[in-house]
Length: 409
Image (cartoon, rainbow, N blue to C red; front, side, top):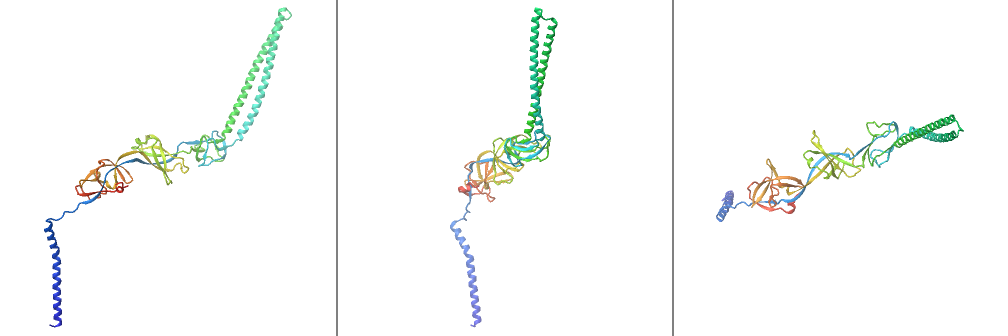
């Protein structure tokens, strides 16, 4: 046999061998399946899906309300001049300063009042001299009255003995009447002089009060919010704006707007975390005053939250607060276990390995957990992360979640 013929025969044998091997490989799974069918008699059922379950946990959550408002002085004092018509000569404080009660804030001119005081001093000296003069005149009139009375008595005795005439007695009796009238006039003049002295003293008191009021003083301890006083301006008590505005004791409140639905739950003493604009950390405050009415247009009520003394607080600044309305106790679940659809909230429970749908009423949320107000009992197994791959009636293998997962936050 020639070489080409031998090569052709070898190729045919190799092709036949390859075909036989392929047929054998295809027949092997069929044979194995047939053997398995003969051994078991029926195909195996798929194993149940393992899911993680948690039990509702008793917990206490704080019921809070977020409100916003404006930082305002608790008590604002407007300081104006107590006398008017005098020029502002000196201003001693600026906005932002803290002042004590009675501290001088500004001074008014005193020249006119000091001149009036000097004139009053002269008038007082003149009144004192007039009183002394009138007292001397009264003493003289009294002496004359006493002498005239004695002369009448002597004349009456002499008249009885016949050594004095009736004419002389009548003359001396007239002298007594004149002396008596002079005493009365001296007394009236003295009273007038004393009244003049009292009037001069009253004028002096008024001038001294005005002089004292040229010092514009702080009526209470506090923080200067604004200064409208200007050097050289004439102080007028009828001006539209005060010279200074003071926050008494520097105390500030957050005047917050509250929806009308939450107003009945607001009361004095509730705690609040207040974050004014620009603050990195909140301040602790307490509700100090709850408004007795709700605005008809905005449907919002007002509450005032007392803030601690902090120099960083600025009147008029924006602030928001979280008010703690109270504590609510109940069962909580991880937020991942609660799902929602058009009918509301629900969870998937596992009972004897069967998945069921349980409708619930959710409440407050805190740190990744939801308070369930209705629909669950403490021992219920709830699918921790249900997702959408489970259906009502599915058979599963429940696996209790570790503590860290059961308390997922």
